[in-house]
Length: 164
Image 1 (cartoon, rainbow, N blue to C red):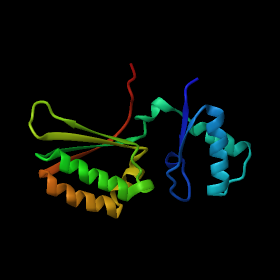
Image 2: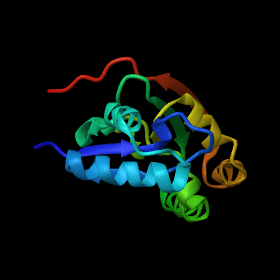
Image 3: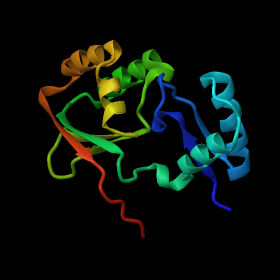
């Protein structure tokens, strides 16, 4: 049986919440109901359970899915370790407030000191909430200290996911 996951960031609500639950479907549903009641003030019932069940995703499908948002950042750096240090500092300072699902930094094989970072978010709104955070603004300033020239950004809406 495929593991399921439910991410509060993908469910519309009155307050932002970063809880993500994964496990067997019945386990995830029970934990999600308990969380929705305790943290969000919902009442347990058929309507709540149906809504939560509709939000369940196969765990492997969380890498990217239609409607999610990717940001591609190309930058040049001679000190990739320095970049890594400020990323780790950013992660520690953001803690549970980040809306990032995952990120990858890759080196360009054909252009020395050129890197591409791909960062995934549940959706564009989550990405903007992350970008508008003061810790992220500080990170962007500090990134200029360890990179050369201006970074270029591409904002991408996922429209299709291809699986083997």
